[in-house]
Image (cartoon, rainbow, N blue to C red; front, side, top):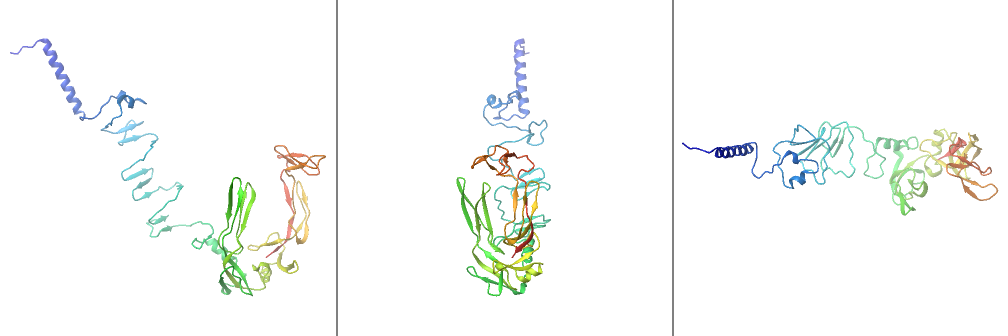
Length: 377
């Protein structure tokens, strides 16, 4: 019979306990080569210092600020990455999703794209089924007026275009001429011309800026104005055209846009000004739609406002009278030069020198004469 000393029994017991511990660790999921660390090593700002920079395997789910993670990585909060975020085959954000071949956006919000967005397939907006065209819209489209041959014309633009010639000419009597600044034959008037663009450039601050007029068919030459610091830096007006739509009509008024018959049909009176210029005089303050005022021909009556008053004028080429109660510079009393009022104050009259504060009831308050007759073409 084997006899063991008490010390030998204690040594054997220690060996058995250590062996059982190793087997227990292995059965709990330990894989040779895997780096394991204690939970107390994972602390803010100390994990990398304590455990080094090797790779770590997490056999279960990982939660950041999440006690019971439901995905392999479950984060409560924001994720910041300096490089790419690569997904397998689908990214889901709320009710929207993105795959390698399709983008689905949930309704109820507003999406914006800052740069260019190129689409090689078909696009459907408001469509209950896949679009069979490059662009298919189930609904209305709002667009600006076309300025090039390949631009889309809206219903309003077409209606306005037709309305600008209705009552003036018969569509059956219209014809087209082309060339370099072509003129309509005698006995006809130009309804529209196809204008080339014009441009202007001016110095604004430390750089040169400018504007370009629209191209296309317009009754009048298009213009553009470039303001610089609220001043009129430059203005451009189209002056060249390569086509015109002409129409047979009655006796034309000045510039050939309307006729004497049109004037009478609109309730006006044909008058001759400047010895031989025929225009239409209307007893109203503004010209009718698609008519334009000829210079400043008008009749006005006096008008009295809260802070200033103006006189009127009889039928003549005179600008509408206006007045403004205050302006920015005053003559210093007893001198013949100007000085600027202090901050938040303005001059209240040249012959009554003095500065008026901008909260005064008459600050920048003006009035204009009443227009009772206006000359149009």
